[in-house]
Image 1 (spheres, one colour):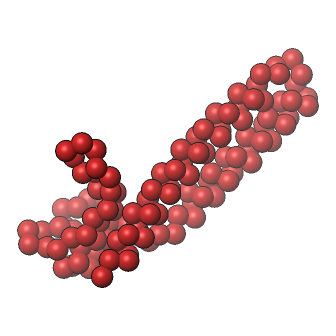
Image 2: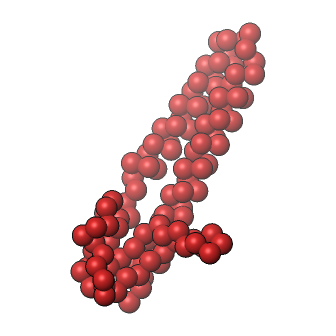
Length: 108
């Protein structure tokens, strides 16, 4: 979200992110002066639900393709591999984001 009103000169911030060379990429921040965070909460239920639905749909499509469309034997494996890769990437991003939020919330 926009940080225009969230950060002013002289505010005390706690940030969490990753270092990429000389640049620090901020994932989340917490403004201690104004008691504002860059995230709305650490409940990422829609993301986790989306990943679960993506995996379920991949399994269903793969099973349907394998049992009913025998001519395209490569399709089930390809579909499943694509969905597993996408789901794995989303889970990785969710993991990074949750760890960043935990580190900020535990700061005193």
